[in-house]
Length: 302
Image (tube, rainbow, N blue to C red; front, side):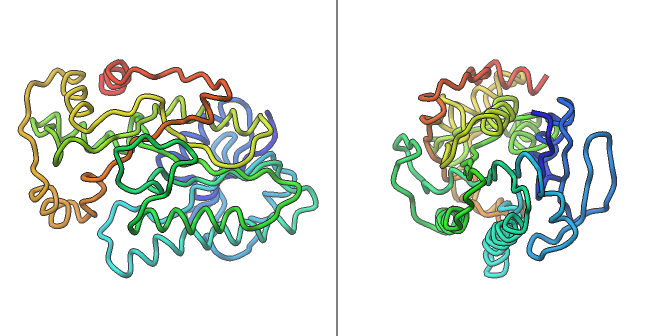
């Protein structure tokens, strides 16, 4: 793989990891961003607004693939305004990318769309790709998102949705705030501790992306590791990896209060979970390199 990859919404934690990984393999990467236009080695940053056509559409013509990560962060209070922006930012980007692909003389070979395991709702039952969808705002967003993505017929472009789980990596992402709390003795069980965390090491997620770019696959994948754990187990393992002892649990009412007043975030992000498996990847023989949570957390926190 040495042709261009276009990453709309690629200026965040996941996008930068993907862009740098591909660029290090001599792939030309174009990141579509609301930020400043610039070039950094094999990575070119181009402006777009995520909803209207512009000069950026020429980047798609002849590209190997698109990896769309666009969407307002869900780490916010779910006010009416934020709910609308969360949904619209996802649907708008899918729609305009479909339109742009249809203008290409040489359409991209593959269009990879980020989705989320939140489509399964708050469940402790094991969920593979074919498990029933859940209820609630986050699940509904995912259902509309995936429906919009797959409804358009792109005869020359494979379409793949990655339902991304709890990504563990350095210098950002979901692990960083938990690591900070644990450092100061606050890394105890959150709520009941029974909610599942379907985690994946960033290196495995990058490997998964390369696998899908290079193999003629289509459809939906659960982009998570094969060994989900409960919140209680995750926090115990994180404390051990960081050399910390017991920490007081945070009861659900306190989590809700802290999330709303201090973190300005929806408390269900911490109190809800899902027990998901990457069944399709396992069936296809994808080799995960990081399946032990203890070893993963020790590597990432030291």
